[in-house]
Image (cartoon, rainbow, N blue to C red; front, side, top):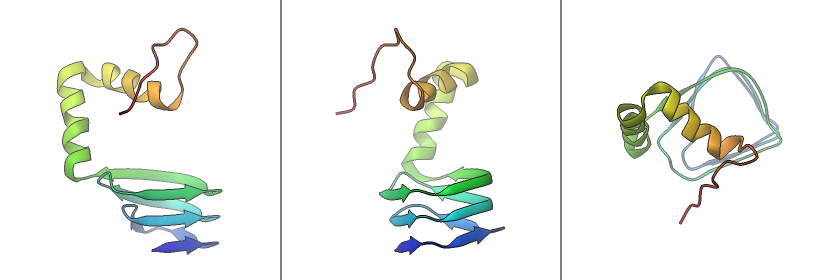
Amino acid sequence: MEYIDQKFEDVVLSLDGNAYRKCIFNNVVFQYAGGPLEMSDCAMDRIRFQFGGDLAQGLHTLYQLFGTEGMLSILRGFTDPQPGDTPIQLR
């Protein structure tokens, strides 16, 4: 489903299979299991995530293998790579 120019407040939203454009999210819980998602030009304040499906299992496995700091370091490599970091290649 596509959502355009909508405001979401104090709700739980599923991200999987949805598109959000120019939306505002305030005090929202995002549920995400790794499915297709489009999000652009959105504003967010006080958000939380609940992960499910294979994505939740993958995150839990990273935690078991590398602990909290190791897992966060891996995730930061996707979102905020620093000079000298080894690039992560997705296939």
